[in-house]
Image 1 (cartoon, one colour):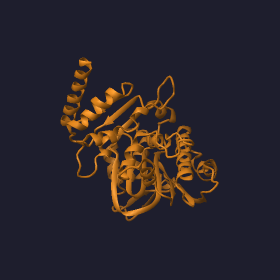
Image 2 (cartoon, rainbow, N blue to C red):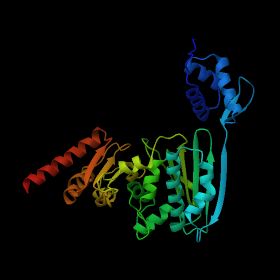
Image 3 (spheres, helix red, strand yellow):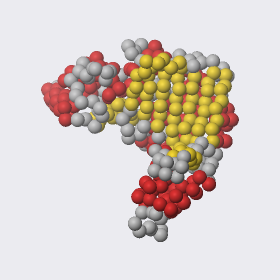
Image 4 (tube, one colour):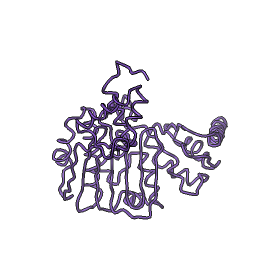
Length: 349
């Protein structure tokens, strides 16, 4: 196999790190195949990563397994009473993130101070625990407490039937149980800035990642309090501004657009068929001008559900634009039927 003389060294090294992150075995062979390298040259790249302290290895040559090395780790616990999120940032996180690009540091500053502030103001926990782990590719950080739990707190505040309904409300944004002191934007924007946003609380485990389907796992174990874990590539090109701009009015700088994963309203074994389900989905939609309804993972909806959203709600809230996305054939059919009924009602007035 002919080797290229102009291979960008950094690109090969980064791809090697990505391969190691996925599966630490057979890396030299995979690298050689991808870039048209000899086994000897591919091993040379791996030896360079070892020498630079970016990876670790164990085992003999053929069975050698690589893994990304932790370049920095920290964990601290603070009494919650009187705690200042900026103090935690300066003391724990800022020194560990100083070498990252400014846009990445800015995202971490926003995300971590928002999550720490949430724990301070909402958790009723005696303390707040934080931590960070960074390798050559990404940084993972967490904020944890042993308080009431975020889903139960929202369930109680909004008088919801099930803690899962709190997930749907969180996904919409502009949700807070302390409106005098909070805008309810922190979790929404943080989850869109990082590469992976993960909340574990009670028996619910929720994960959000850009351009991927939200994942909900129900566990028999009951996790006390709330643990938020975030992951972000060290070389992410994302900026705070582009995330804020994506959900804001460009002239008024207001948070006026949201994306709602409709599957969060679909409890296990249920179908979305009733008007009451649609009303729960539409709760607080009037706070936005543009609501994207993401039907990924929803195979069908009932006529009453579609009618309540796309005819009744739309007629009562003409300033709110509902935008369906990722609707399969059956869902699209019901939406079209409701929209047609809405147009007929307008013509009869």
